Length: 367
Ligand SMILES: Nc1ncnc2c1ncn2[C@@H]1O[C@H](COP(=O)(O)OP(=O)(O)OP(=O)(O)O)[C@@H](O)[C@H]1O
Ligand SMILES: [Mg+2]
Image (cartoon, rainbow, N blue to C red; front, side, top):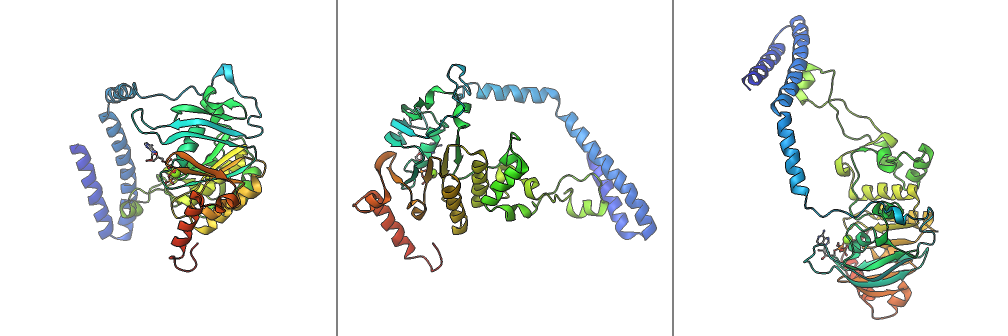
């Protein structure tokens, strides 16, 4: 450690010397310091690696395996005896029979005996008060949480009998708070490198995110060719990445994108993948009405032959759905066309009235 302190202090002395000397001395000293700084950084890396010995890594790994040994595991990703036909689901019919779901074995039911049938190619709006179980229903359909009892059947196949990878590769979801992963936009849209650039650009243009991808990400990499002045002035920032288009950089968890932008990228991915059952869980965070309109237009235009489930917080987005499923505290409350529901004293009518009342208190221009 004393060696580290010594080297730090020497670096500082050299920089001060540079600031006070004439140009020639400055250049010479600058080169010397540049070399010295590189050597120092190399030393730091080697020193730190040596200090954390392999034994420590092994200890940490064995603790990790010990702690996670009793964690519940997901069911098999593939069940060889029950593989899916390549074109499943062809019709896109979804039926849930007395579906119950809870998050913890001792917890209360968040889906309570939910039964409904969605016909192939129907456009279904799912609404209900916050905490009503709408997102939980999507988790159940993707088996992110296993059903407590009851089952869901898609095109005649009980989804609990097939492998998770098979199931999840046939349904696409645009979640309420989509996570993008660190990498380029290309990696995020097409992690398995299955699509051409033209296909990706067609999806990008349909979702109107070309402008977003033109803005380079505010990102620095580690810089190898150090400029000594910059090094001491700005810290070890590295090179500015000018990645745009498909090469635009996405930070961990998509943190350099807003929720609305992440939903558009997620929609773009769903469009590219062209699965029979897309599920859209509308963001509760304030996505602007432009983003909302783009999403709805893409869904209406591009997913005509799909069964689409749209969980809506903005009721106007699902007013032209074929039918609306209203959920109330994890239970099935109503399931009918918007017109029929509005003609009665229904939960749906009360939700619409409640939204109208709130809107009448908003400043003009908001919707
Ligand atoms: N990971 C979890 N662990 C335990 N309980 C959860 C979890 N996620 C959701 N819940 C509970 O399940 C119930 C249903 O939540 P869910 O997220 O499905 O509601 P929602 O209808 O999607 O609400 P919102 O409109 O706010 O998105 C709530 O009571 C919630 O607290
Ligand atoms: Mg939700």
